[in-house]
Structures are given as C-alpha cells and as structure tokens.
Length: 257
Length: 233
Image 1 (spheres, chains in turn blue, cyan):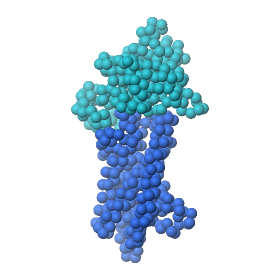
Image 2 (spheres, each protein chain N blue to C red; image 1 turned 90 degrees about the vertical axis):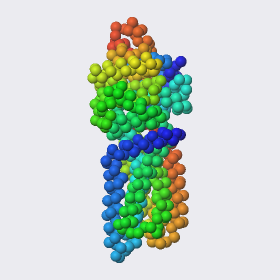
Image 3 (cartoon, each protein chain N blue to C red; image 1 turned 180 degrees about the horizontal axis):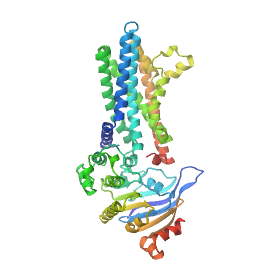
Image 4 (cartoon, rainbow over the protein chains, first blue to last red; image 1 turned 135 degrees about the horizontal axis):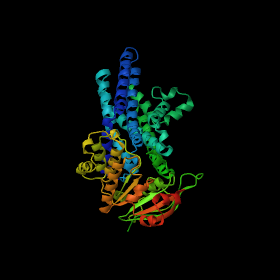
C-alpha cells in the first residue's frame, strides 16, 4: 500500500467534489437546513420540554454526520462507475485497500467540515454545547468509525451485486438508523426489538447520546456501542474483500465500469 | 522476450453459458503490434480484462514480462490501457490528467507535453464530458501514455472516429511502436489491422482459431475481409 496513491485518490475526489454541485447539496445543504428546522423546534420546545427538543436536535446532527461520512465514500465509488473511470484507476496499479482508504480520507475531511459547521450552528443559534464539547468529539469519532464500517459494507455489497445496486449508497445507512431507533429509548420497544436494536450499529450509540443529554450515565452504553461498531467494522472489511474478489471472478467488476 | 504470454487460459462467468475463453494460448513479442480480431462476444474484451487483472481467470496463466500480474501487481506499472468506453468525467481536461499523473507518480509537467502532443492544450480548462468523441479518444490515449508504458493495450481504439482522427491516432501508435512500445489491440476494423498490425490472432467463441503474421495472411487471402470471412462466419 502506497501513501502517494492514497493521497492522489483523495486529491482526485476533492477535485470531483468541487465540481459536483449535487454533492454540495447532499453534504451541506440538506444537513444544515434540517439542523435549522430541528433547531427552532428545540428552541420552541424549550418552553415546555427542553430536553426532548435538544435530543431531537443533537440526534439529527449525528445522523447527518453519519450520512455524510458514509455517503461520501460510497458516492465516490458510484461516480467511478458512472464516468467509466475505474478501469483507468485500477490499471494504474491501485489496490482495493488503497482505493478504499483514499475515499475514507477524503470523506473524513469533508465530514469534519460538515460537523464543525453543524456544531457551531447549534452552539450559536440554539443552545450552549461548550459544557459537553469533549463528549461531542468522542461521539463524533465513534460515529465516524461506525459509518465508515457501513460504507465499507455497502461498497462490498455493491461490488458483489453490481451497478444496479448503486442505490445502496443512499439507503443503507437509513436502514440501520431506522432499526437503531434514534429517538426512542430501547426500553420502550417490544422485547424482541430491544435485543435487535442493541446489536444495530447505532442502537446503543443513540442510547448513550440520549443519556448524555438528559444527564444520565452514558459511558456503559457508549463502550458497548464501540464494541458493536468494531464488530461491524471488522465484518465489513471481510465483506468488502469477498465482494471485491467475487466481482472480479464473476466479471461484474469489468461490467460495472 | 515475450511482453505478454497467455497459457491454457479458461474463463467462464456461469456454468450455464460455459466457457467464454477456452484454452487460450498465445504470446505477444516485445516491440510488436499484435491485433486481436473477432466477432462481437468472442471474448476479446474479457481477455484484455484478464491481462489487466480486472477479471480473474478460472484456469491458466498470464505473464507480463515473465511476471504474473495477479501476484506481482507492480508489473502493471509497465502497462497501460485505452478502453473502448471513453471517460466522461466532470473534471477539467488538465485535472483529469493531473490526477493520473499523481497516481502514476510522474511529473505534472508531463501533462502539458501530452496535452500539446494530442492538440488538447486549448481544451485544458474544459470539462471532459464536453469533449467530442475524437477528443475523448485522444484524452484516453494521452492518459495511457503518462507512465510511459512498455505495453499499450487498446480495445477498439478508433471505434466511432472520423477518418482524420483515426489517421492521427494510427500514426501516433506507429510512432510509439517505433520507440519500442509493444502494442496489443482488439478491433473489428480491418483497415486498422492492415495499417498497424505485425501479427494477427482470430478469436471466436472464446477459442483462438488462427495466429499468423499479417504479411502471411495477405499472401494466403485476397484481403483481410476474406480472412475474416474464413474464420468469422
């Protein structure tokens, strides 16, 4: 694995990103507008249910951030298929891991900007987050790890299933977020769903985040959530490898690009 | 020395359809221009994809300068490829090439020279997708020359081009070959084979039916069209 190739790929993603207005819309316009909608909701509910409003707002920030990290990686891969470019990339000697790491690095840079902007907007427009800024950073790191795992899983499935599954790039995270029940405590779910939600990539993460915001002990859930994220990440790496290799055997890889 | 050597190569995509490449054996000598002829769906592009390691074969071996590119990936740095599909990137022409210059770890100054060589310098600030088919073919070829490959593989290099652009690309390929670059190309275009090739292989339904020097073919048959009809019908 060569750092120069990873850097070159990240640079290429940057140039494509600068030119793609729809990517700016995806990664900045939608997150910021929905943040503002929920932010004013949080301000209004401050009169009678301040914590509920804040939970909705902060969950929305992390949800948007998770989408930003995951979709930036997967949409870059999609763009290679749409522009018939991956052949050119892979015959330059770039390996499957370099291909992925280049995307991860660029995604982390763009998503960090997105997160800084969202946290600053939250702080200056809606409520003071300076007391929990350390926790926000720690939760951001875990969200990034989990979302990179989902992106790697999505990329693996995309290679395995072919280009007609490009829609996974937009939908895979939503599926996991839905089953992680971001706005409701796990305890209120039917029993069979509780166990299920705990093993979803963001289930215990959102539980920990909600507990942080209502002043409850959150560290235990956070630790378990980190463990779940690590398991997803490791399995995703395996699925990516299998998907990539299968794609080259089945000829789907050649047809994708 | 063989630039490319293919031994006992088999490939199938699914059991129902059987093998798309069946016991393919041939070699491309260093410095020659080798044409792969065959009807649509005969396995030409699959064969190219296997040489480039984009597709994994079932059985058999591929050697590039005596090295297995699946195991020693670095040997691919000596190869480049011009696919049949043209790039349609949103990037500016100069940025498109600059990115690949960085990937190949070559000086960015080389981009300027290639842009001038291929008469693309004036278009350097345009987005790739705004270029004509001929300009995109030149861009694709310019990209493929960034790393100064010793082997250049082309899939239908002049398909859909007007005679003037076709001529320009042919003369560029001949110049490259004079400098020692081995050229391996797949085509349906007989005039292309006539102008460029030293040796020709005919592939049909995944089998190599004939490999011969172009001069011998032209001795045996009235024309390359007749040669095609002999094996391709």
